[in-house]
Length: 95
Length: 450
Image (cartoon, rainbow over all chains, first blue to last red):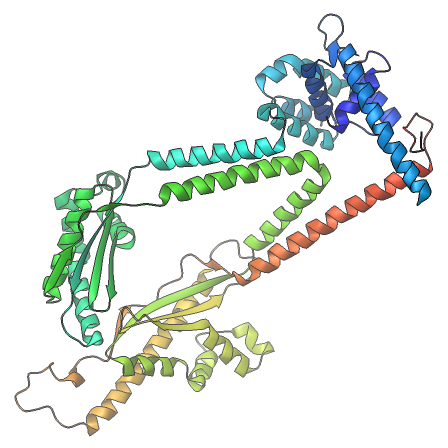
Protein backbone atom coordinates (compact mmCIF):
# COMPACT_ATOMS: atom_id res chain seq x y z
CA UNK A 1 0.00 0.00 0.00
CA UNK A 2 1.24 3.47 -0.81
CA UNK A 3 1.64 6.58 1.27
CA UNK A 4 -1.66 8.04 0.03
CA UNK A 5 -3.76 5.04 1.06
CA UNK A 6 -2.32 5.10 4.59
CA UNK A 7 -3.06 8.81 4.86
CA UNK A 8 -6.67 8.28 3.71
CA UNK A 9 -7.13 5.40 6.18
CA UNK A 10 -5.65 7.53 8.98
CA UNK A 11 -8.02 10.35 8.11
CA UNK A 12 -11.09 8.08 8.08
CA UNK A 13 -10.03 6.58 11.42
CA UNK A 14 -11.09 9.95 12.89
CA UNK A 15 -14.62 9.72 11.44
CA UNK A 16 -16.55 9.55 8.18
CA UNK A 17 -15.49 12.10 5.59
CA UNK A 18 -16.04 12.97 1.92
CA UNK A 19 -13.22 13.62 -0.58
CA UNK A 20 -12.66 17.31 0.15
CA UNK A 21 -12.81 16.74 3.95
CA UNK A 22 -10.19 13.95 3.64
CA UNK A 23 -7.97 16.27 1.61
CA UNK A 24 -8.24 19.06 4.21
CA UNK A 25 -7.72 16.66 7.12
CA UNK A 26 -4.61 15.07 5.56
CA UNK A 27 -3.17 18.51 4.87
CA UNK A 28 -3.81 19.46 8.49
CA UNK A 29 -2.31 16.41 10.21
CA UNK A 30 0.42 15.37 7.73
CA UNK A 31 1.24 18.69 6.09
CA UNK A 32 0.82 17.04 2.72
CA UNK A 33 -1.69 18.01 0.06
CA UNK A 34 -3.06 15.03 -1.82
CA UNK A 35 -3.86 15.84 -5.45
CA UNK A 36 -7.40 14.97 -6.61
CA UNK A 37 -6.11 12.18 -8.87
CA UNK A 38 -3.99 10.66 -6.09
CA UNK A 39 -6.81 10.95 -3.54
CA UNK A 40 -9.44 9.27 -5.69
CA UNK A 41 -6.90 6.70 -6.91
CA UNK A 42 -6.37 5.76 -3.25
CA UNK A 43 -10.11 5.79 -2.48
CA UNK A 44 -10.72 3.47 -5.47
CA UNK A 45 -8.02 1.02 -4.35
CA UNK A 46 -9.19 1.04 -0.70
CA UNK A 47 -12.80 0.47 -1.69
CA UNK A 48 -11.72 -2.38 -3.94
CA UNK A 49 -9.88 -3.98 -1.00
CA UNK A 50 -12.95 -3.51 1.20
CA UNK A 51 -11.10 -1.33 3.73
CA UNK A 52 -13.42 1.66 3.26
CA UNK A 53 -17.07 1.86 2.18
CA UNK A 54 -19.43 4.65 1.09
CA UNK A 55 -21.86 5.91 3.70
CA UNK A 56 -25.54 6.50 2.88
CA UNK A 57 -27.05 6.98 -0.58
CA UNK A 58 -24.89 7.94 -3.59
CA UNK A 59 -24.08 11.63 -3.59
CA UNK A 60 -21.72 14.03 -5.39
CA UNK A 61 -20.06 14.61 -2.03
CA UNK A 62 -20.01 10.98 -1.01
CA UNK A 63 -18.80 10.33 2.54
CA UNK A 64 -16.70 7.21 3.27
CA UNK A 65 -16.18 5.22 6.45
CA UNK A 66 -13.47 2.88 7.64
CA UNK A 67 -14.62 -0.77 7.64
CA UNK A 68 -13.62 -3.33 10.28
CA UNK A 69 -11.12 -4.86 7.84
CA UNK A 70 -9.72 -1.41 7.14
CA UNK A 71 -9.34 -0.75 10.87
CA UNK A 72 -7.45 -4.07 11.32
CA UNK A 73 -5.21 -3.26 8.41
CA UNK A 74 -4.48 0.24 9.70
CA UNK A 75 -3.72 -1.11 13.18
CA UNK A 76 -1.29 -3.64 11.71
CA UNK A 77 0.39 -0.91 9.66
CA UNK A 78 0.64 1.47 12.63
CA UNK A 79 2.12 -1.32 14.74
CA UNK A 80 4.71 -2.11 12.04
CA UNK A 81 5.61 1.53 11.52
CA UNK A 82 5.76 2.08 15.29
CA UNK A 83 8.19 -0.82 15.65
CA UNK A 84 10.41 0.56 12.91
CA UNK A 85 10.31 4.08 14.38
CA UNK A 86 11.09 2.77 17.85
CA UNK A 87 14.09 0.81 16.60
CA UNK A 88 15.31 3.77 14.58
CA UNK A 89 14.96 6.12 17.55
CA UNK A 90 16.79 3.70 19.87
CA UNK A 91 19.63 3.32 17.42
CA UNK A 92 19.85 7.06 16.91
CA UNK A 93 20.04 7.61 20.67
CA UNK A 94 22.88 5.09 20.95
CA UNK A 95 24.77 6.41 17.96
CA UNK B 1 -7.57 25.83 -14.34
CA UNK B 2 -10.74 24.18 -13.01
CA UNK B 3 -11.99 23.89 -16.59
CA UNK B 4 -8.78 22.18 -17.66
CA UNK B 5 -9.01 19.82 -14.67
CA UNK B 6 -12.58 18.89 -15.68
CA UNK B 7 -11.36 18.17 -19.22
CA UNK B 8 -8.64 15.92 -17.80
CA UNK B 9 -11.28 14.04 -15.78
CA UNK B 10 -12.84 13.07 -19.14
CA UNK B 11 -9.65 11.11 -19.89
CA UNK B 12 -10.35 8.59 -17.08
CA UNK B 13 -11.63 5.17 -18.14
CA UNK B 14 -15.46 5.10 -18.57
CA UNK B 15 -16.12 2.57 -15.73
CA UNK B 16 -13.97 4.60 -13.35
CA UNK B 17 -15.73 7.82 -14.41
CA UNK B 18 -19.14 6.20 -13.93
CA UNK B 19 -18.22 5.35 -10.33
CA UNK B 20 -16.13 8.34 -9.17
CA UNK B 21 -16.49 10.98 -11.92
CA UNK B 22 -19.11 13.12 -10.18
CA UNK B 23 -17.34 12.94 -6.83
CA UNK B 24 -14.07 14.00 -8.43
CA UNK B 25 -15.77 16.94 -10.14
CA UNK B 26 -17.33 17.97 -6.81
CA UNK B 27 -13.88 17.80 -5.20
CA UNK B 28 -12.41 20.02 -7.94
CA UNK B 29 -15.27 22.51 -7.38
CA UNK B 30 -14.64 22.58 -3.62
CA UNK B 31 -10.86 22.46 -3.51
CA UNK B 32 -10.05 24.32 -6.73
CA UNK B 33 -7.36 23.14 -9.13
CA UNK B 34 -3.72 24.05 -9.51
CA UNK B 35 -1.59 23.17 -12.50
CA UNK B 36 0.00 20.38 -10.46
CA UNK B 37 -3.51 18.99 -9.85
CA UNK B 38 -4.07 18.74 -13.61
CA UNK B 39 -0.86 16.75 -13.85
CA UNK B 40 -1.95 14.62 -10.90
CA UNK B 41 -5.31 13.96 -12.58
CA UNK B 42 -3.55 13.04 -15.82
CA UNK B 43 -1.47 10.51 -13.91
CA UNK B 44 -4.65 9.14 -12.31
CA UNK B 45 -6.34 8.89 -15.72
CA UNK B 46 -3.38 6.90 -17.03
CA UNK B 47 -3.56 4.55 -14.05
CA UNK B 48 -7.30 4.08 -14.46
CA UNK B 49 -6.59 2.70 -17.92
CA UNK B 50 -3.64 0.58 -16.93
CA UNK B 51 -5.45 -1.13 -14.03
CA UNK B 52 -2.33 -2.99 -12.94
CA UNK B 53 -0.89 -2.97 -9.45
CA UNK B 54 2.78 -3.70 -10.13
CA UNK B 55 4.98 -1.49 -12.25
CA UNK B 56 7.08 -4.45 -13.27
CA UNK B 57 3.89 -6.07 -14.57
CA UNK B 58 2.94 -2.81 -16.28
CA UNK B 59 6.36 -2.59 -17.98
CA UNK B 60 6.12 -6.22 -19.11
CA UNK B 61 2.53 -5.76 -20.31
CA UNK B 62 3.43 -2.59 -22.23
CA UNK B 63 6.52 -4.20 -23.80
CA UNK B 64 4.53 -7.33 -24.74
CA UNK B 65 1.72 -5.19 -26.18
CA UNK B 66 4.20 -3.14 -28.23
CA UNK B 67 5.91 -6.33 -29.41
CA UNK B 68 2.60 -7.95 -30.40
CA UNK B 69 1.27 -4.88 -32.22
CA UNK B 70 4.53 -4.24 -34.12
CA UNK B 71 4.97 -7.91 -35.04
CA UNK B 72 1.33 -8.08 -36.14
CA UNK B 73 1.72 -5.03 -38.37
CA UNK B 74 4.96 -6.42 -39.83
CA UNK B 75 3.35 -9.80 -40.47
CA UNK B 76 0.36 -8.14 -42.15
CA UNK B 77 2.65 -6.35 -44.62
CA UNK B 78 3.14 -8.38 -47.81
CA UNK B 79 6.20 -10.64 -47.86
CA UNK B 80 9.11 -9.69 -50.13
CA UNK B 81 11.43 -12.08 -51.87
CA UNK B 82 15.07 -11.60 -52.76
CA UNK B 83 16.28 -13.16 -55.99
CA UNK B 84 19.97 -13.31 -56.86
CA UNK B 85 21.78 -13.98 -60.09
CA UNK B 86 25.46 -13.88 -60.70
CA UNK B 87 27.66 -13.22 -63.69
CA UNK B 88 31.40 -13.62 -64.01
CA UNK B 89 33.28 -11.00 -66.00
CA UNK B 90 36.07 -12.00 -68.35
CA UNK B 91 39.57 -10.54 -68.23
CA UNK B 92 42.15 -10.26 -65.49
CA UNK B 93 42.57 -6.46 -65.29
CA UNK B 94 40.18 -5.20 -62.57
CA UNK B 95 40.08 -1.69 -64.05
CA UNK B 96 39.16 -3.07 -67.45
CA UNK B 97 36.44 -5.23 -65.87
CA UNK B 98 35.10 -2.28 -63.90
CA UNK B 99 34.94 -0.14 -67.05
CA UNK B 100 33.11 -2.89 -68.95
CA UNK B 101 30.59 -3.33 -66.14
CA UNK B 102 30.01 0.43 -66.03
CA UNK B 103 29.29 0.52 -69.72
CA UNK B 104 26.98 -2.48 -69.43
CA UNK B 105 25.11 -0.92 -66.50
CA UNK B 106 24.56 2.32 -68.40
CA UNK B 107 22.89 0.33 -71.20
CA UNK B 108 20.92 -2.27 -69.20
CA UNK B 109 19.83 -0.11 -66.29
CA UNK B 110 18.89 2.84 -68.46
CA UNK B 111 15.57 4.45 -67.69
CA UNK B 112 14.06 3.40 -71.03
CA UNK B 113 15.05 -0.28 -70.59
CA UNK B 114 13.66 -0.43 -67.06
CA UNK B 115 10.48 1.44 -68.11
CA UNK B 116 9.94 -1.21 -70.75
CA UNK B 117 10.57 -4.03 -68.27
CA UNK B 118 8.17 -2.60 -65.67
CA UNK B 119 5.40 -2.16 -68.22
CA UNK B 120 5.93 -5.50 -69.97
CA UNK B 121 6.01 -7.58 -66.75
CA UNK B 122 3.35 -5.50 -64.98
CA UNK B 123 5.63 -4.74 -62.02
CA UNK B 124 4.62 -2.35 -59.22
CA UNK B 125 0.90 -2.12 -60.14
CA UNK B 126 -0.10 -0.30 -56.93
CA UNK B 127 2.77 2.19 -57.15
CA UNK B 128 2.07 2.91 -60.82
CA UNK B 129 -1.49 3.92 -59.93
CA UNK B 130 -0.21 6.59 -57.58
CA UNK B 131 3.12 7.69 -59.08
CA UNK B 132 4.41 8.49 -62.57
CA UNK B 133 6.36 5.66 -64.20
CA UNK B 134 9.66 7.57 -63.94
CA UNK B 135 9.36 7.72 -60.14
CA UNK B 136 8.49 4.02 -59.92
CA UNK B 137 11.55 3.13 -62.01
CA UNK B 138 13.70 5.45 -59.92
CA UNK B 139 12.53 3.65 -56.79
CA UNK B 140 13.22 0.29 -58.41
CA UNK B 141 16.79 1.33 -59.21
CA UNK B 142 17.46 2.87 -55.81
CA UNK B 143 15.79 0.40 -53.47
CA UNK B 144 15.01 -2.94 -55.05
CA UNK B 145 17.56 -3.57 -57.80
CA UNK B 146 21.24 -3.74 -57.01
CA UNK B 147 24.32 -4.66 -59.01
CA UNK B 148 27.26 -5.31 -56.71
CA UNK B 149 30.67 -6.28 -58.10
CA UNK B 150 32.95 -8.46 -56.00
CA UNK B 151 36.16 -9.14 -57.87
CA UNK B 152 35.30 -10.75 -61.20
CA UNK B 153 31.84 -11.79 -59.94
CA UNK B 154 28.88 -9.45 -60.13
CA UNK B 155 25.79 -10.08 -58.00
CA UNK B 156 22.46 -8.90 -59.35
CA UNK B 157 19.78 -8.74 -56.65
CA UNK B 158 16.14 -7.87 -57.03
CA UNK B 159 13.66 -7.69 -54.12
CA UNK B 160 9.96 -7.85 -54.92
CA UNK B 161 6.68 -9.09 -53.34
CA UNK B 162 6.33 -11.89 -55.92
CA UNK B 163 9.02 -14.59 -55.84
CA UNK B 164 8.53 -15.47 -59.53
CA UNK B 165 8.78 -11.86 -60.71
CA UNK B 166 11.84 -11.29 -58.53
CA UNK B 167 13.56 -14.34 -60.05
CA UNK B 168 12.64 -13.37 -63.62
CA UNK B 169 13.85 -9.74 -63.30
CA UNK B 170 17.12 -10.67 -61.55
CA UNK B 171 17.90 -13.27 -64.21
CA UNK B 172 16.97 -11.00 -67.11
CA UNK B 173 19.09 -8.11 -65.81
CA UNK B 174 22.04 -10.48 -65.22
CA UNK B 175 21.73 -11.92 -68.73
CA UNK B 176 21.51 -8.49 -70.33
CA UNK B 177 24.52 -7.31 -68.33
CA UNK B 178 26.44 -10.42 -69.38
CA UNK B 179 25.68 -9.75 -73.05
CA UNK B 180 26.63 -6.07 -72.77
CA UNK B 181 29.81 -6.79 -70.76
CA UNK B 182 30.69 -9.84 -72.88
CA UNK B 183 30.65 -12.02 -69.71
CA UNK B 184 30.84 -15.73 -70.42
CA UNK B 185 29.04 -17.02 -67.30
CA UNK B 186 25.62 -16.31 -65.84
CA UNK B 187 24.24 -18.35 -62.96
CA UNK B 188 20.90 -18.16 -61.20
CA UNK B 189 20.37 -18.73 -57.48
CA UNK B 190 18.28 -21.82 -56.62
CA UNK B 191 15.11 -20.00 -55.57
CA UNK B 192 14.26 -16.55 -54.23
CA UNK B 193 14.40 -16.30 -50.46
CA UNK B 194 11.97 -14.46 -48.25
CA UNK B 195 13.29 -11.14 -46.96
CA UNK B 196 13.98 -11.84 -43.29
CA UNK B 197 14.62 -9.83 -40.20
CA UNK B 198 11.80 -7.33 -40.77
CA UNK B 199 9.36 -8.95 -38.31
CA UNK B 200 12.04 -9.41 -35.67
CA UNK B 201 13.25 -5.83 -36.10
CA UNK B 202 9.71 -4.42 -35.92
CA UNK B 203 8.85 -6.57 -32.87
CA UNK B 204 12.00 -5.44 -31.07
CA UNK B 205 11.22 -1.81 -31.88
CA UNK B 206 7.62 -2.22 -30.67
CA UNK B 207 8.79 -3.84 -27.42
CA UNK B 208 11.29 -1.03 -26.86
CA UNK B 209 8.61 1.64 -27.45
CA UNK B 210 6.20 -0.18 -25.08
CA UNK B 211 8.88 -0.46 -22.41
CA UNK B 212 9.84 3.21 -22.82
CA UNK B 213 6.16 4.21 -22.46
CA UNK B 214 5.87 2.14 -19.28
CA UNK B 215 9.06 3.65 -17.85
CA UNK B 216 7.88 7.16 -18.66
CA UNK B 217 4.54 6.46 -16.97
CA UNK B 218 6.42 5.01 -14.00
CA UNK B 219 8.61 8.09 -13.68
CA UNK B 220 5.53 10.32 -13.85
CA UNK B 221 3.87 8.24 -11.14
CA UNK B 222 6.77 8.01 -8.74
CA UNK B 223 8.61 11.32 -9.04
CA UNK B 224 6.27 13.97 -10.28
CA UNK B 225 8.68 16.88 -9.95
CA UNK B 226 11.76 14.92 -11.01
CA UNK B 227 9.98 13.63 -14.10
CA UNK B 228 8.91 17.17 -14.94
CA UNK B 229 12.55 18.23 -14.68
CA UNK B 230 13.63 15.45 -16.97
CA UNK B 231 10.82 16.12 -19.42
CA UNK B 232 11.47 19.87 -19.55
CA UNK B 233 15.21 19.47 -20.02
CA UNK B 234 14.62 16.76 -22.56
CA UNK B 235 12.34 19.07 -24.55
CA UNK B 236 14.72 22.04 -24.31
CA UNK B 237 17.65 19.95 -25.50
CA UNK B 238 15.58 18.40 -28.24
CA UNK B 239 14.70 21.91 -29.45
CA UNK B 240 18.36 23.00 -29.40
CA UNK B 241 19.47 19.78 -31.04
CA UNK B 242 16.91 20.23 -33.82
CA UNK B 243 18.12 23.74 -34.52
CA UNK B 244 21.82 22.90 -34.33
CA UNK B 245 23.89 23.62 -37.46
CA UNK B 246 23.68 20.74 -39.88
CA UNK B 247 26.17 19.32 -42.33
CA UNK B 248 25.60 19.53 -46.05
CA UNK B 249 27.36 16.87 -48.07
CA UNK B 250 27.81 16.80 -51.83
CA UNK B 251 28.90 13.52 -53.42
CA UNK B 252 30.33 12.52 -56.74
CA UNK B 253 31.76 9.41 -58.39
CA UNK B 254 34.61 9.38 -60.90
CA UNK B 255 35.70 6.46 -63.03
CA UNK B 256 39.48 6.26 -63.37
CA UNK B 257 41.48 4.21 -65.84
CA UNK B 258 43.92 2.59 -63.42
CA UNK B 259 45.38 2.67 -59.91
CA UNK B 260 47.93 5.32 -60.91
CA UNK B 261 45.12 7.59 -62.04
CA UNK B 262 43.28 7.03 -58.76
CA UNK B 263 46.36 8.06 -56.79
CA UNK B 264 46.77 11.11 -59.02
CA UNK B 265 43.18 12.23 -58.27
CA UNK B 266 43.85 11.90 -54.55
CA UNK B 267 47.10 13.85 -54.88
CA UNK B 268 45.45 16.63 -56.89
CA UNK B 269 42.64 17.09 -54.38
CA UNK B 270 44.99 17.09 -51.41
CA UNK B 271 47.28 19.71 -52.88
CA UNK B 272 47.43 22.38 -50.14
CA UNK B 273 48.53 25.14 -52.52
CA UNK B 274 45.53 24.53 -54.78
CA UNK B 275 43.15 24.34 -51.78
CA UNK B 276 44.52 27.68 -50.61
CA UNK B 277 43.68 29.22 -53.97
CA UNK B 278 40.23 27.59 -53.91
CA UNK B 279 39.43 29.13 -50.53
CA UNK B 280 40.40 32.66 -51.58
CA UNK B 281 38.63 32.43 -54.96
CA UNK B 282 36.43 35.57 -54.93
CA UNK B 283 33.31 34.17 -56.59
CA UNK B 284 33.11 31.06 -54.36
CA UNK B 285 32.89 32.65 -50.84
CA UNK B 286 34.18 29.47 -49.17
CA UNK B 287 34.76 29.84 -45.41
CA UNK B 288 34.13 33.57 -45.86
CA UNK B 289 33.32 34.31 -42.19
CA UNK B 290 36.07 32.04 -40.87
CA UNK B 291 38.71 33.73 -43.04
CA UNK B 292 38.52 36.83 -40.83
CA UNK B 293 39.18 34.85 -37.65
CA UNK B 294 41.36 31.89 -38.57
CA UNK B 295 44.74 31.55 -40.29
CA UNK B 296 44.73 30.11 -43.79
CA UNK B 297 46.58 26.93 -42.76
CA UNK B 298 43.72 26.00 -40.46
CA UNK B 299 41.14 26.53 -43.18
CA UNK B 300 43.17 24.48 -45.64
CA UNK B 301 43.36 21.72 -43.02
CA UNK B 302 39.60 21.97 -42.50
CA UNK B 303 38.97 21.69 -46.24
CA UNK B 304 41.24 18.63 -46.34
CA UNK B 305 39.34 17.03 -43.47
CA UNK B 306 36.00 17.84 -45.11
CA UNK B 307 36.99 16.12 -48.33
CA UNK B 308 36.67 12.37 -48.40
CA UNK B 309 38.13 10.31 -51.23
CA UNK B 310 37.37 6.57 -51.16
CA UNK B 311 37.90 3.71 -53.53
CA UNK B 312 36.10 0.45 -52.83
CA UNK B 313 38.22 -2.67 -53.34
CA UNK B 314 35.12 -4.38 -54.78
CA UNK B 315 34.73 -1.78 -57.49
CA UNK B 316 38.20 -0.78 -58.65
CA UNK B 317 38.25 2.22 -60.88
CA UNK B 318 35.37 3.96 -59.08
CA UNK B 319 36.52 6.84 -56.89
CA UNK B 320 33.91 8.38 -54.62
CA UNK B 321 34.51 11.97 -53.55
CA UNK B 322 32.48 13.90 -51.03
CA UNK B 323 32.76 17.36 -49.57
CA UNK B 324 30.89 18.62 -46.52
CA UNK B 325 30.14 22.08 -45.17
CA UNK B 326 28.47 23.15 -41.96
CA UNK B 327 25.29 25.19 -42.42
CA UNK B 328 24.29 28.23 -40.39
CA UNK B 329 23.13 27.74 -36.78
CA UNK B 330 19.40 27.80 -35.98
CA UNK B 331 18.38 27.30 -39.62
CA UNK B 332 14.80 26.05 -39.42
CA UNK B 333 14.92 24.50 -42.88
CA UNK B 334 17.46 23.66 -45.54
CA UNK B 335 19.83 26.48 -46.32
CA UNK B 336 19.98 26.67 -50.12
CA UNK B 337 23.06 28.90 -50.24
CA UNK B 338 25.13 26.42 -48.21
CA UNK B 339 23.84 23.48 -50.23
CA UNK B 340 24.78 25.19 -53.50
CA UNK B 341 28.17 26.26 -52.16
CA UNK B 342 28.92 22.65 -51.12
CA UNK B 343 28.02 21.47 -54.61
CA UNK B 344 30.08 24.24 -56.28
CA UNK B 345 33.18 23.39 -54.23
CA UNK B 346 32.95 19.72 -55.15
CA UNK B 347 32.40 20.67 -58.79
CA UNK B 348 35.57 22.79 -58.69
CA UNK B 349 37.43 19.84 -57.20
CA UNK B 350 36.32 17.52 -59.99
CA UNK B 351 37.27 20.07 -62.64
CA UNK B 352 40.67 20.45 -61.01
CA UNK B 353 41.22 16.67 -60.91
CA UNK B 354 40.26 16.36 -64.59
CA UNK B 355 42.38 19.32 -65.70
CA UNK B 356 45.33 17.95 -63.78
CA UNK B 357 44.87 14.57 -65.45
CA UNK B 358 44.60 16.05 -68.94
CA UNK B 359 47.78 18.14 -68.46
CA UNK B 360 49.65 15.11 -67.16
CA UNK B 361 48.56 12.95 -70.07
CA UNK B 362 49.43 15.54 -72.67
CA UNK B 363 52.94 15.63 -71.24
CA UNK B 364 53.16 11.83 -71.23
CA UNK B 365 51.79 11.48 -74.76
CA UNK B 366 54.23 14.06 -76.07
CA UNK B 367 57.12 11.89 -74.89
CA UNK B 368 55.42 8.50 -75.63
CA UNK B 369 56.19 6.55 -78.84
CA UNK B 370 53.65 6.79 -81.65
CA UNK B 371 50.97 4.05 -81.79
CA UNK B 372 51.87 1.05 -83.93
CA UNK B 373 51.06 1.47 -87.57
CA UNK B 374 47.60 0.18 -88.47
CA UNK B 375 46.17 0.32 -84.91
CA UNK B 376 42.58 1.64 -85.18
CA UNK B 377 41.73 4.89 -83.43
CA UNK B 378 40.49 4.42 -79.88
CA UNK B 379 42.41 1.16 -79.29
CA UNK B 380 45.61 2.76 -78.00
CA UNK B 381 45.57 3.16 -74.16
CA UNK B 382 46.38 6.84 -74.52
CA UNK B 383 43.12 7.36 -76.45
CA UNK B 384 40.76 6.30 -73.64
CA UNK B 385 39.82 9.12 -71.25
CA UNK B 386 41.80 8.82 -67.98
CA UNK B 387 38.93 10.16 -65.85
CA UNK B 388 35.21 10.21 -66.54
CA UNK B 389 32.48 11.57 -64.32
CA UNK B 390 29.98 8.83 -63.46
CA UNK B 391 27.92 10.84 -60.96
CA UNK B 392 28.33 14.62 -61.04
CA UNK B 393 28.48 16.60 -57.79
CA UNK B 394 25.10 16.22 -56.11
CA UNK B 395 23.12 19.05 -54.55
CA UNK B 396 22.78 18.15 -50.86
CA UNK B 397 19.05 17.74 -50.33
CA UNK B 398 18.71 16.26 -46.86
CA UNK B 399 21.20 17.82 -44.47
CA UNK B 400 22.73 15.44 -41.95
CA UNK B 401 22.87 16.45 -38.30
CA UNK B 402 26.36 16.89 -36.98
CA UNK B 403 26.58 13.64 -35.06
CA UNK B 404 29.58 14.75 -33.07
CA UNK B 405 27.35 17.12 -31.07
CA UNK B 406 24.88 14.36 -30.08
CA UNK B 407 27.07 13.15 -27.23
CA UNK B 408 27.41 16.66 -25.80
CA UNK B 409 23.63 17.12 -25.88
CA UNK B 410 22.97 13.80 -24.19
CA UNK B 411 25.60 14.49 -21.53
CA UNK B 412 24.26 18.03 -20.94
CA UNK B 413 20.68 16.80 -20.58
CA UNK B 414 21.75 14.03 -18.19
CA UNK B 415 23.82 16.40 -16.02
CA UNK B 416 21.03 18.99 -15.76
CA UNK B 417 18.42 16.33 -15.00
CA UNK B 418 20.71 14.89 -12.30
CA UNK B 419 21.28 18.36 -10.80
CA UNK B 420 17.51 18.93 -10.72
CA UNK B 421 16.96 15.57 -9.09
CA UNK B 422 19.60 16.13 -6.40
CA UNK B 423 18.36 19.66 -5.66
CA UNK B 424 14.92 18.20 -5.10
CA UNK B 425 16.26 15.43 -2.87
CA UNK B 426 18.26 17.89 -0.83
CA UNK B 427 15.23 20.16 -0.48
CA UNK B 428 13.17 17.22 0.76
CA UNK B 429 15.85 16.29 3.26
CA UNK B 430 16.02 19.89 4.59
CA UNK B 431 12.21 20.02 4.83
CA UNK B 432 12.25 16.71 6.70
CA UNK B 433 14.77 18.05 9.24
CA UNK B 434 12.73 21.22 9.77
CA UNK B 435 9.62 19.12 10.40
CA UNK B 436 11.51 17.06 12.98
CA UNK B 437 12.84 20.08 14.81
CA UNK B 438 9.59 21.98 14.95
CA UNK B 439 6.63 19.66 15.02
CA UNK B 440 3.53 21.68 14.36
CA UNK B 441 0.49 21.84 16.57
CA UNK B 442 -1.84 20.43 13.91
CA UNK B 443 -1.21 16.86 14.99
CA UNK B 444 1.71 15.83 12.80
CA UNK B 445 3.14 12.42 13.69
CA UNK B 446 6.09 13.13 16.01
CA UNK B 447 9.41 11.54 15.18
CA UNK B 448 10.19 10.94 18.85
CA UNK B 449 10.68 7.36 20.08
CA UNK B 450 7.47 5.83 21.38
